[in-house]
Length: 126
Image (cartoon, rainbow, N blue to C red; front, side):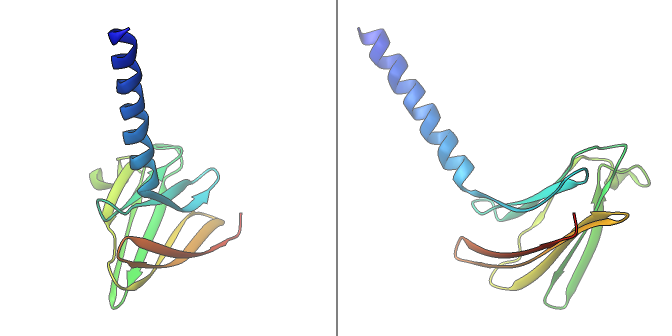
Protein backbone atom coordinates (compact mmCIF):
# COMPACT_ATOMS: atom_id res chain seq x y z
CA UNK A 1 0.00 0.00 0.00
CA UNK A 2 2.81 2.43 0.89
CA UNK A 3 4.58 1.63 -2.39
CA UNK A 4 1.40 2.42 -4.35
CA UNK A 5 0.94 5.73 -2.54
CA UNK A 6 4.62 6.60 -3.04
CA UNK A 7 4.42 5.74 -6.73
CA UNK A 8 1.23 7.79 -7.12
CA UNK A 9 2.86 10.73 -5.34
CA UNK A 10 5.97 10.54 -7.54
CA UNK A 11 3.84 10.39 -10.73
CA UNK A 12 1.72 13.32 -9.54
CA UNK A 13 4.79 15.43 -8.80
CA UNK A 14 6.34 14.53 -12.15
CA UNK A 15 3.15 15.54 -13.96
CA UNK A 16 2.95 18.77 -11.96
CA UNK A 17 6.55 19.72 -12.77
CA UNK A 18 6.06 18.83 -16.45
CA UNK A 19 2.92 20.94 -16.71
CA UNK A 20 4.56 23.82 -14.87
CA UNK A 21 7.48 23.73 -17.31
CA UNK A 22 5.19 23.50 -20.32
CA UNK A 23 3.20 26.55 -19.21
CA UNK A 24 6.32 28.72 -19.12
CA UNK A 25 6.76 28.25 -22.88
CA UNK A 26 4.75 30.24 -25.37
CA UNK A 27 4.67 29.35 -29.07
CA UNK A 28 5.36 32.52 -31.05
CA UNK A 29 5.74 31.22 -34.61
CA UNK A 30 5.44 27.87 -36.37
CA UNK A 31 6.39 27.76 -40.06
CA UNK A 32 5.89 24.29 -41.60
CA UNK A 33 9.02 22.92 -43.26
CA UNK A 34 11.18 25.65 -41.71
CA UNK A 35 10.96 25.87 -37.92
CA UNK A 36 9.37 27.39 -34.85
CA UNK A 37 10.03 30.05 -32.22
CA UNK A 38 9.05 29.74 -28.59
CA UNK A 39 9.52 32.04 -25.62
CA UNK A 40 10.55 30.53 -22.30
CA UNK A 41 9.18 33.11 -19.89
CA UNK A 42 10.84 31.56 -16.83
CA UNK A 43 14.33 31.72 -18.32
CA UNK A 44 13.62 34.85 -20.45
CA UNK A 45 14.92 33.33 -23.68
CA UNK A 46 13.67 32.90 -27.22
CA UNK A 47 14.11 29.35 -28.55
CA UNK A 48 14.58 28.94 -32.30
CA UNK A 49 14.18 25.36 -33.60
CA UNK A 50 14.93 24.34 -37.21
CA UNK A 51 12.73 21.45 -38.40
CA UNK A 52 15.20 20.09 -41.00
CA UNK A 53 18.70 20.93 -39.74
CA UNK A 54 21.47 20.50 -42.28
CA UNK A 55 18.89 20.42 -45.09
CA UNK A 56 16.71 23.53 -44.64
CA UNK A 57 18.22 26.15 -42.32
CA UNK A 58 15.87 28.52 -40.54
CA UNK A 59 16.99 32.11 -40.91
CA UNK A 60 15.79 34.47 -38.19
CA UNK A 61 16.02 38.06 -37.11
CA UNK A 62 15.09 40.05 -34.02
CA UNK A 63 14.41 43.80 -34.03
CA UNK A 64 14.03 45.27 -30.53
CA UNK A 65 14.12 49.03 -30.17
CA UNK A 66 17.27 50.20 -31.96
CA UNK A 67 18.91 46.74 -31.78
CA UNK A 68 18.83 44.36 -34.74
CA UNK A 69 20.22 40.82 -34.79
CA UNK A 70 20.07 38.03 -37.36
CA UNK A 71 21.34 34.47 -37.51
CA UNK A 72 20.19 31.00 -38.49
CA UNK A 73 19.59 27.60 -36.94
CA UNK A 74 20.27 24.25 -38.59
CA UNK A 75 22.58 25.69 -41.24
CA UNK A 76 26.08 24.91 -42.45
CA UNK A 77 27.71 28.14 -43.66
CA UNK A 78 29.36 28.93 -40.29
CA UNK A 79 29.88 26.84 -37.14
CA UNK A 80 27.53 29.07 -35.14
CA UNK A 81 24.71 28.29 -37.61
CA UNK A 82 24.91 24.48 -37.21
CA UNK A 83 22.88 23.90 -34.00
CA UNK A 84 19.26 22.99 -34.77
CA UNK A 85 18.11 24.72 -31.57
CA UNK A 86 19.43 28.13 -30.61
CA UNK A 87 18.55 30.49 -27.78
CA UNK A 88 18.60 34.27 -27.75
CA UNK A 89 17.72 36.69 -24.93
CA UNK A 90 14.03 37.59 -24.74
CA UNK A 91 13.63 41.38 -24.96
CA UNK A 92 12.15 42.65 -21.71
CA UNK A 93 9.66 45.54 -21.38
CA UNK A 94 10.00 46.41 -25.06
CA UNK A 95 8.12 45.78 -28.28
CA UNK A 96 10.07 43.55 -30.66
CA UNK A 97 9.66 41.91 -34.05
CA UNK A 98 10.80 38.39 -34.90
CA UNK A 99 11.01 37.02 -38.44
CA UNK A 100 11.80 33.47 -39.52
CA UNK A 101 11.97 32.05 -42.98
CA UNK A 102 13.71 30.33 -45.82
CA UNK A 103 13.33 31.29 -49.47
CA UNK A 104 9.65 32.02 -50.23
CA UNK A 105 8.40 30.96 -46.78
CA UNK A 106 8.35 33.68 -44.14
CA UNK A 107 6.59 34.41 -40.87
CA UNK A 108 6.81 37.36 -38.51
CA UNK A 109 5.47 38.29 -35.09
CA UNK A 110 5.19 41.55 -33.23
CA UNK A 111 5.61 40.84 -29.52
CA UNK A 112 5.76 42.60 -26.19
CA UNK A 113 6.84 41.02 -22.91
CA UNK A 114 5.85 42.48 -19.57
CA UNK A 115 6.30 40.77 -16.19
CA UNK A 116 6.18 37.24 -17.60
CA UNK A 117 3.28 37.88 -19.95
CA UNK A 118 3.74 37.89 -23.72
CA UNK A 119 1.49 39.52 -26.27
CA UNK A 120 1.92 38.22 -29.83
CA UNK A 121 0.54 39.29 -33.23
CA UNK A 122 1.44 36.76 -35.98
CA UNK A 123 1.83 37.23 -39.74
CA UNK A 124 2.70 34.44 -42.17
CA UNK A 125 2.58 33.53 -45.86
CA UNK A 126 2.60 29.74 -45.44
